[in-house]
Length: 324
Figure (cartoon, rainbow, N blue to C red):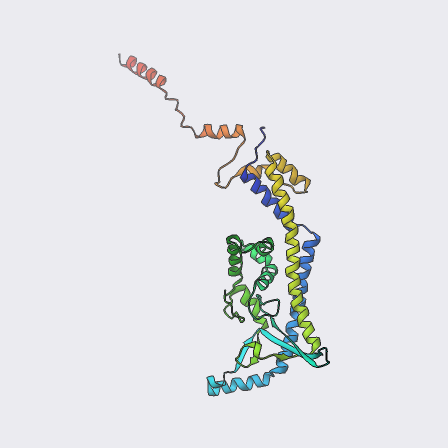
């Protein structure tokens, strides 16, 4: 059989199949990413339980119930209880250089898109955590959860913006700059729901720092650090895949025949079916070797039936003879 020449479509097919294998290999980078996600779950559970303890210590449930009773009785003037999932926690167990007590405080947002640097406003860091945490879910929805990691060295561009917006929409991001993100839907809403707690006071959370101990504060910091570590491990893992894929592109571009690409995959321990690769192209047309292509073209011709011109003349002669 004649060797099948490589073309752009075959290169893309080979690239995507090999890349898929790269993404599912049990590498140290992938294991570190998966482990960091499990660590996030552990920290989320402990930190959220601790937050409930600290918040209810500041706003006792019985006081919350009383205020709700007053609201039902007197209406909006007593509407001072709200639910929130982000809080300023503060402790004053530290001292400055002169031995004077100092206050240490920061904003901790338990929401899916919560900032990782202590700000109450959304940022790309919170979104990076969200896509890293729900990577498989986003993949299943034909989104690219690796876009931030793949574009880490590039400024904002249409390609990056397109994929980020698709991911945020799939996750249910409200696209609001508000710290509360009360309008999140779908995955984000479900993720956020367990972390809402009752607080007293309708002003922004920055004006109601909730007292905690230094040890409690350190636990909240450890939880937020775990979220940042997931982003970092995701970046490291995707960096390793990008490096491999860059070399893969160079090699495939240099190959003239499909057999060379198949050989490369085999050397990488990847079994590929050549017939499957060449069976269809993007338009759904069948790609054949020369012999099969010739057969296909012949089958498409409008062939003359047995009733050719010569046969018609002979039939006419026979008819005339029969009547004479």
